[in-house]
Picture 1 (cartoon, rainbow, N blue to C red):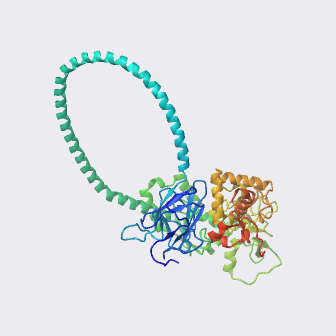
Picture 2: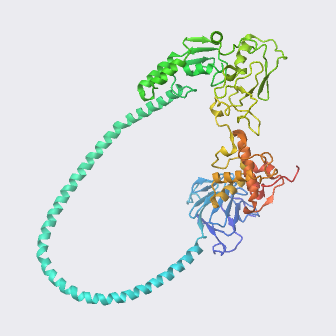
Picture 3: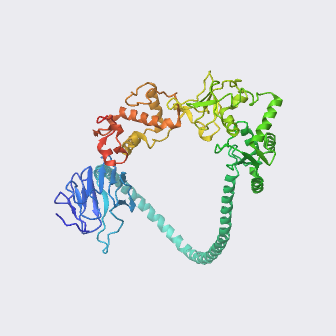
Length: 598
């Protein structure tokens, strides 16, 4: 046994490590002259410290028992995997743990620490990777090139023989012509010398002028840049301040600058006066945080901030027509309004007009019509009795039990809730009630979780609720989700590699999987929860990702022959070790069912 020191000792099984092997596909060339090179001959090579199972052993205190793996996929790509504590560095960049990283010819690989091999630092563990895979291809190509060159040489020799004969004929003619030209050139040489000297003096003078002009221009540009720097910094600060101000003066309902600001108490959220006056017809809760509002106040300070902002940015001012409409819709004219006083005014107006039934009669009173919430459904019963409660509790819960169609008929078909026995669903996003109609032809319920959503009936008031419930074919997916294949990173890596090699886009793959789903090609074993679903089934966003994971698993089972064969894990797709241990994922196949301890 070797003693454990800080020096590097590489022990190869072959005696002659410097001689290249016929199966050698790469070399790790040591940068230190003390240590020999490492020849790479097998597809999977392990490097570690003091272990008989390792092909290459490095006896160093900084090297782990299994430090790294080098893999060759026989298709021109080579990977290195770090499974150590002190790390592996490729080109002075650390390789992520348990994630394959591709290496190329000429890359610098350092084990345990970043250091260059110098005289002072003799413990540096650095190598240069050299690949030998392309040598055979280059030799065959060189042979073909030599054959083509020999053919061209023979053709060129025949052409030169013909050209030499023609040149001899032309030389005799050119000699006579040159004798006549020489006599004329002697006369013109004297004039050319004088013109050359004059042009040279002019060129030197012009070069001096060009240098002076360049120096002056550089000084001017330097002065301009020094003056522009503080101005540009001030502009950037002013732009950032305007962005921060604009975020705080935008109405959450209309998503535009606040006009005649109104502040709600106790939550202190700000809205346009017209926007919140329309919201008051629906509910007495805050549109942002759903807290019961006790008082409404007009905020003059924010109105002044908005006016100052519009003087700097007049292009963001609203049109005159829009302002007139907002003034007509705004019903908050007092500086402070309490909720109980506003309710009394609304009841008086409704009694005078008599267009809609009053909320104080027996049909809509809280005492004669108690509501119970069961499974997201509001129902009433005349036989049940309420327990004693204060007037404030009844008033705060009255608007929550009544939807907008209890007060005003539906504009499309004139439907209105029964005043004696109204039934309601509750939206799982905005928590607002909407009518339960006997002729229900709206897309309001998820077929998996059986929850209700009001976006398909009259449009959800919350931004998150818009498009939350859709058909399966209407969802758009561009990449594989992170939770696919039960969060197995190696199975996801193999599947992505399969798609790139076959040039398959994920959007196209999603369409083909839905076509197979409509043809009922997936069994209940492959898709235990969603095998009965089709592309036109309604599903919410929360249930779509689990559905897509089962759909990918079913497709992966169909093409299992195109992947490398491995032993099946006892726990199959339900294995909990596959999520965090990469060596287990690479050794066993998890695209299978559980066979142990069901």
